[in-house]
Each structure stands twice: as C-alpha cells, then as structure tokens.
Length: 223
Image (tube, rainbow, N blue to C red):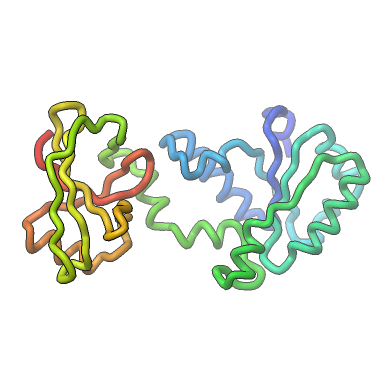
C-alpha cells in the first residue's frame, strides 16, 4: 500500500493472491528493464492484492479510502468475474473509479484456463517466452534495420513447409530468419521437431533471438 503514495500517478491493479501481486510487479519491472513491448501494459500499474476473494476487508469503505482518486482495474480469478463485478459496483458507490478486466474470464470460458486460476497462471503458460525475453545476452533485431532481402528457401512438406528468408540488416549484417507457411515468425517452442530437422539438414546454427521484441529463430550468416 505504501507504493500508492510513492507512485501516486500510477493506476492500480488488484489481484487476489499476494504471490500473483509480486509476480506481476516483477514482470512489470522486467518489461521496463528489457524493453519488452508484450508486457509494457503490466509495467504501468501499482500491483496490490486482496489476500483472498473476501480477504482483509478490502471492500470496507475505510480500507478503500486510500484508493480515492486513482484509476483501478480488478483482475479476478477465473470463475469469480461476476462476484468481483458486483463488488466493483459497491466500490463505485464509495466514489472509486474502478473497472473489472474480462481477460481471464474470456480465457476460462473458451477452455484456455481452469476454474480459480489467475493472471500468473495465465502468463506462466508462456514461461519459456518470458525467460527468453528477459535474457540480456540474446540477439536483438529490428525490422526497421532491414535494408534488403537476398532470397527465400522453401523446402516443402518434409520440413513442415517452413520458410527460410535471408535478410541484410544495416547494409552489412546478414541473418536467416525462420517463418511458418503463413509467413509468420516461428517462436521458440513452436514446431521444434521441424525446426531441428531443418537446422540439421541445411547445416544452420539456428538460435533464439528477438525481432521487434518478439521471439524468433535466427541463423547468423555474417555480422
């Protein structure tokens, strides 16, 4: 709660669990440190927790006075959206500017998340991507630095229709980038068997990298 006065202009995000609060706060700091656009949204908040769906009297008027004048968004656990929506209406009567995120509930209704899972559970589905994005030694590329394309390789069905495109960056650096058949970057963790088979057959030292802040596979031809 002390952060509410220390960073008084920040909006406030409220989750149920203390561990999720800490996870989101750390992820927000990582987004700023490593300039990760995928998580910039989460870096803007002061994260606090209720300590439970009905925990620590967080809906009491005296307790919520500290939130007056702040923009507040609630991230309820899956299955609790309507309860927290009702709670938010009570808090609005106290004069709070508050809304409830539908993010997790939509994932729950589509079968992507289980009952009583939270924001941390959702983001941990992308644990490998998060670890990759938070590596300081990883190759970082930008599409704005591409000066020309040298060509493409389409090896066909034996390699799951992967596409290898060779680009020149900044006029001197040459990199091969892997795409799927829809011409989307292949992220580490996707089509690993096909990527490994491709790398061995064509003798490419493919490694994870970032392009415009998004994970991809790269073979460094010349740098």
